[in-house]
Length: 391
Image (cartoon, rainbow, N blue to C red):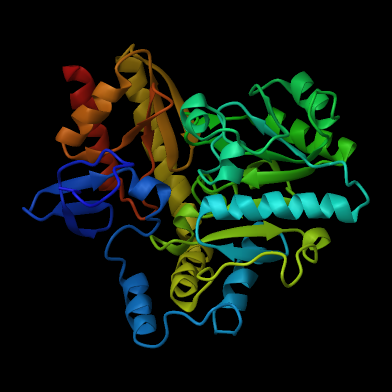
């Protein structure tokens, strides 16, 4: 198995061949409840009727045109992103790491256009995960991600989560590296353990960026596009970044990212500055159109409701099991932090038919599809209770 595939992932032996809603089925007929959602990707779950019909229709028309030509969905999707985010223009990419690469280039050029050629550095936070390409990896904290591939892009300063004094110094350029073009910040860190930076920290970061002339990039690749019950996590704080990067659930399972900017930055990149052969094609944007319209049509309220149900259930479990030290996250982006045994719990849940994963070493991460039902959550909580009791 995987004889001719480079083994960058530890794969489970099961072969998934079909699904419906939040449930997946294997080739031998077993059913799993999916509370990982392709790592926050499968927003509309499996077999979603409207998404399936849209893709079936588009597959019979045109899959790809390149960005040298127009197709019907480019402006529709960009317009909906502007409406949902309160921002103004979008560059389409194929992934989250590509969206962050665009943001890195855009913020550097924007500073240069402002006459700040010396502002070539970046500030990021400990626990951050912004991607695996050489640029985005340079913003990603953690030796296990970085060390095999160094040296990376210089000029990145990492600040401890919650350290506003350290953040202020870094944004003022008081460290050894160059003055920063931008601060990259995940409002809730996903790979960092479903770690919510907190409203106070996020608002202070926005203020410090304003004071120092640093551009604020909110990486909402995992916590955005509706995951927390608002389209952007930063909207819970009434916070407006200069740049937002999106991906994961944006096209409901197809590879798509976006770098969304304010009107002040919309003219920064001009023809020849940046591009992508595949990004923003008619097939993926047709899928994104369905996702964005579903979110506009009431799905956000459902996410908030189901998120409250799941969090309440997890908090009840925490009262009964002392090894749970914290329930983290918001909406349908939640995590159980365990004193010990998080990897063992994740494996037990999988054996019992509940798909999750373990992140940051001690957090079991829950990212169900947005279409998850009350019954699905009740069943997931039952499985969790049984596995916790058996550990």
